[in-house]
Length: 205
Image 1 (cartoon, rainbow, N blue to C red):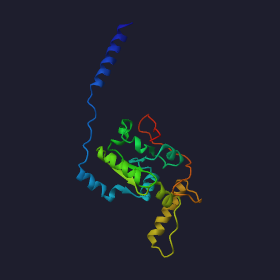
Image 2: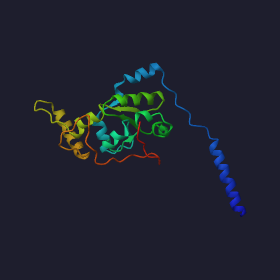
Image 3: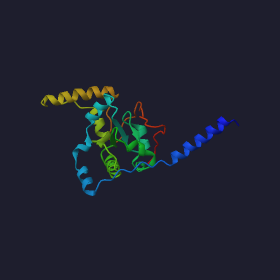
Image 4: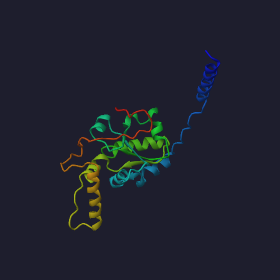
């Protein structure tokens, strides 16, 4: 073996050893019970389906959607670009790099608000930042964005403007005229999963 390869091997071993000596990423400080209570009662943590649809249409790079339902529900239908992190896996080490960051707004969603609220609370207690909940979840998403109902003739002009946006959003996201049960959403056409690292989103809970 030539001296060049021996020197290269020694350098690589030295670099590998140095990487093992790097300090772990310090954990973020968790909120106190008082701070957590204030956060829980802050309505600003809920984002409307209209706002999320607008940010999705505009391809907002600061939006990170997290579906906390089961893998089966995620496969049946999911918001485009969302990543499936089932509620039961939320605190697994594999998801830290997804959730412990400051670059994006993390928006949890489920069928309604229940599981998403639980995910939000767990993430807040871990000290993660920029956390939100999609108000009403997939059920309200279908009711307002995928299949919006036209306003009444007596409704204010602002309702007609909102309906116009929702109709356009429905076409953008592939909405159908068929009636959809709020408990069993229609099968999605295609979901593009945003990847932050090579590991793919896992299913199960």
